Image 1 (cartoon, helix red, strand yellow):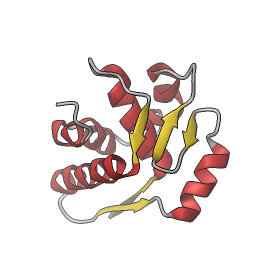
Image 2 (cartoon, one colour):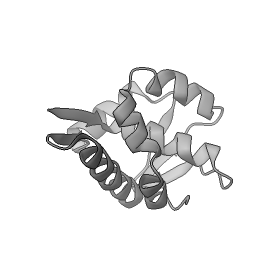
Image 3 (cartoon, rainbow, N blue to C red):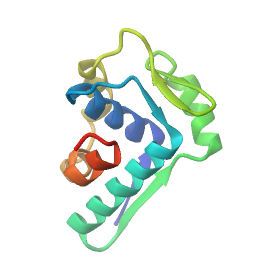
Length: 119
């Protein structure tokens, strides 16, 4: 069985991890986001065996993300920034409430956190 991960999930969970770390950041490069996505996918696939993850974050998805979530994020040429006033609790309530347990575990796994340069 495949799980679909949208850019909103990847970005929000990266920022939650950043904000809860001892070195909180309010921006992420597209390269770091890509590496985080790869690490999340590996972790999820190991945990679930067959199946895997399909990540949805091409240009069309990014354009829709920019419009739909502009209260939370600002898309720049080189990455994504967190809007002023948005904190980890806001992101957790909005973006983590519907995640499956296995997907949440993949987002917070130490390997994924290392991709964010947190661990």
